[in-house]
Length: 258
Image (tube, rainbow, N blue to C red):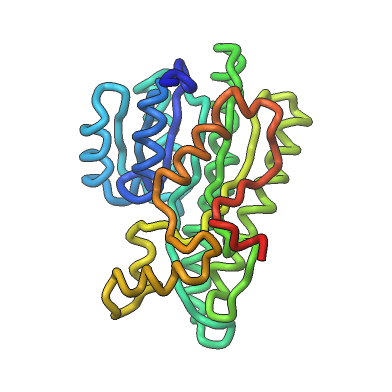
C-alpha cells in the first residue's frame, strides 16, 4: 500500500531529524502533503527538499504562539488547509526533583508540553474547517514517551511533561468528539529510539556502548528505529484508525509489560 494518506495535508513539528523526519518521509510515501517545521529552519528546508514537491518547510519555535499562528497560515497558503497535526518537537533533560533547576523545569515543559497545548488549540479551527470542507477525517497525534507512563528518579521534568502530553491528548480527543469535529487525537509513547535525543542519555561513553546499555533494559533486546514509530504514526493518522481516539500506543519493545 502506498496511498493510506492520499489527499491529506499534515504538519509535523520537529521534522528536520529523528522521529519527525521519519514520519515526514512515511507520510509523503503514503500520499500526504507535508509541512515540515523545526526551530532548525535550514534542516527543515533540507528535509522537505529531499521529499520533493509534496513537502514544504518553515522555521518554527513551538514555544511561541505567534510562530504557531504563522506556521498554520503557511500550511493553509501552501497546501490549502490541514488534516493532520503531529506534535513531535521535544527535548530531553535529565535530573532528579532536587537537582533540576527551575530554568530546566520550565524549558522542558515549554517545549514538550506547552507546545502541544498551543498546537492543539491553535490548529483545531483550521483542521475542523478543512476536514468539513473536504469530508475527510482529521487527526492529531502527540508524541509522548514511555517516560510519560514509567517514571525514573533522574528524569523529573521529562516524566512530568510527557505524562502531561498523555492526559492532554485524552482531553483533546473528548473535546473533538463532543464538538463532532471528525478529528481524532491520540498519543504515541516510544521507548529508546536511535535518534539524536539519545545522545543526552549515553553521556560521554561511546555511542554504540551506550545504545547497548539502553538495549539491555528492553525485553526485545534492542533500541528502536525511527521507522518503528513512523509506521505507528501512519496507522493512527489514517482512516484505518477512524474509531481510535483518546488512546495511547506504546512502541516500547515490551518494557511496559514488565
